Length: 267
Image 1 (cartoon, one colour):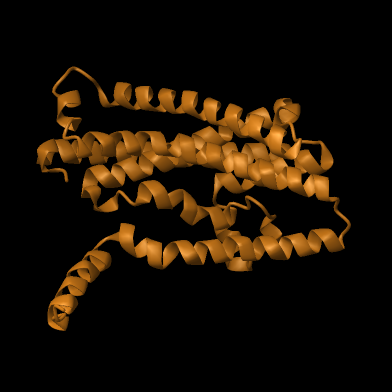
Image 2: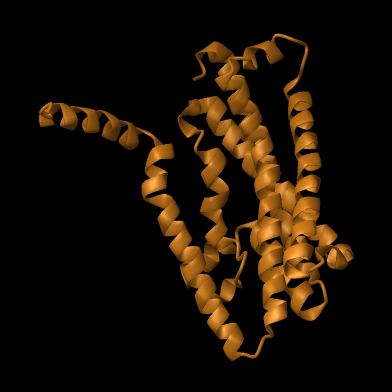
């Protein structure tokens, strides 16, 4: 039987441990995701306890949770199209090919965001069909009320995607993990499955600075009370306008910065 040289085992472990230390992709799997899961579902459990003690019916609760899941998938889909498009071109070494053509960055972004909208609609349709089959819940029943929130969700995904893409263009693929984790990182503060009121005060401050919070708060009011709070729509819209202007500017300056250094230097 071959003896194991433990110093070589240690050397192999150390080599990959250095990768974990230097890569947010790998370290987030160890630390960030478990903490976020505990926070989200821990706070959700507290909220469910309050709901049942307050006499809220199970059907309304199921509808609110299922709608939260569907809506969050819409944000993720609209957020991911632009950064994933950039990363795909970087992995295939084809990003340079786009920009030696007359293609403008605005045209490139418009194409990606338009494709993202199409994919988002397909995601919504698929999720709506399965929600009807599995839970006997027709999300399209609320269509007229939820349409404004759907549009705001897509815009929220855009500025998240612009910010991630700006980071990748400026600093390289070391920030590619943000394409998967940024939306997850803001999810505990976005009140997807529970109201902002169950969060601690410091977390509420962060929550009210996010347009996604007002979307999910407004969505629950539609389900529980059958009405739309105009304040939620206005606040989400204003914050979305601010964030999309800021992140689009950041993306544009990052792109110009990368052009000066050369697209071939991006890895």
